Length: 331
Image 1 (cartoon, helix red, strand yellow):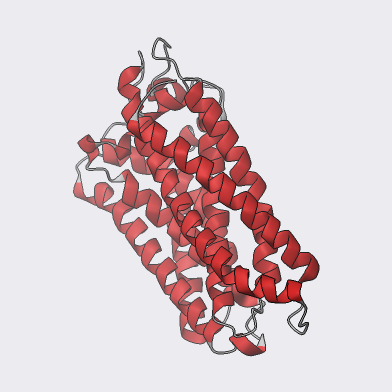
Image 2 (cartoon, one colour):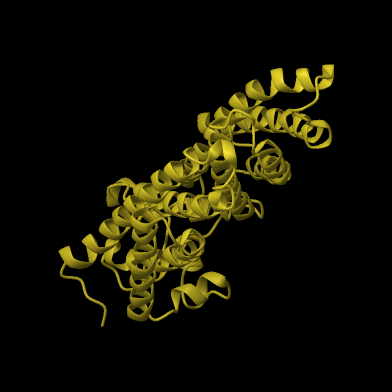
């Protein structure tokens, strides 16, 4: 194991998150089995007394879970200086077989945690806990992912050895590599850019329609979900080329470094925020007619849609500024 402050912070926080997630999961199981607001039993009174506290604590825990994705990226980038052959986070994540599974699980838990926080906020607006079963059912889906992520992340960090010779990003994100990354790298850049632009315009249009006319919530959520992998693919396939001003450098991690003004962080934050908020609009759509949420849900959906639209706009701005502000062109 490499003793690095950020590594210790991630391992410690992961342990606390796992313990709190397990406790909240046990509480959620009890709620799913025994919650009855019309009952005056001792068990119901105890559940009512503890549920707000548990929800508040788990909200802060999942809030840090969102931040931990970017802490992992920052840590992996910093660790790259310790491995022979590494130039960025790619080298650190390929130092053992647990690196990329950790990252993928972090992304999954980021999205699920974001959706849980949205449901929890909506539930807190009702006087009768109208979504309490829904949010704890979602929490029980989230808990196994959090536990799996923590175990794999521990295996990743505990298995790191400074004498490992690893790979650089040029070898992974290149046309000669046989992997999913190759399919993205070899995608024609200009058609990919057109596809990304068309998806962004369609998603933005659906979001505007929802904000103005309060229609098409499910469509906006669907387009937001589809735009997420499309945006990531566009970053790897074409946007990164304009940021680096190099025709063969497709790495999605080097843009997190100082040499490129850390543009990767706001870029990925915008992609994830747009996806979570857009999906949240669709997630809340079926609860618009709950009596205690008739006023709060539509207003909350509007705020989510506006946040998603701003995130899409920021993403487009960050993506197209390098394209139109440099003399680099793809031939």
